[in-house]
Image (cartoon, rainbow, N blue to C red; front, side, top):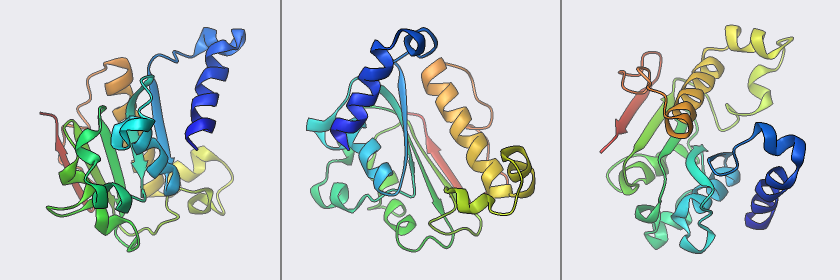
Length: 181
């Protein structure tokens, strides 16, 4: 994953058409499950994987156990948003509590826990039966919350835009915590 992700950044950076529309010096890395593990590593949770183009990380129901076992989450060098779900019993508990990934990560850090939902909440299965992305976002409250929180987080840390949503109480969520500094 490390080499694939770095190669993707390099490819976009070197492609004339893509380089015109993408700022590869300010990459937001977003990943689900093992992809969440990979983006945390790129953000510095595995120091040897640290990729300096990555400026913010969103870890959606990530596999964090190795980082907790090795105590490396304090080495994260970028803002992080974790997302979990109420019924995602395999991954979400490892993000919570005084010894969880959220507590172990340096600020700025955010934690979103969706009402209901399982480990597939961040996949296309969550929108099964809806005819379009717009219809899914309207019909599925969790999909709309994922979209809003991820978008605002990336806008805040990649584009320096203010975000009242990130400073709010997390309306519609099962739980929401954040620490800016």
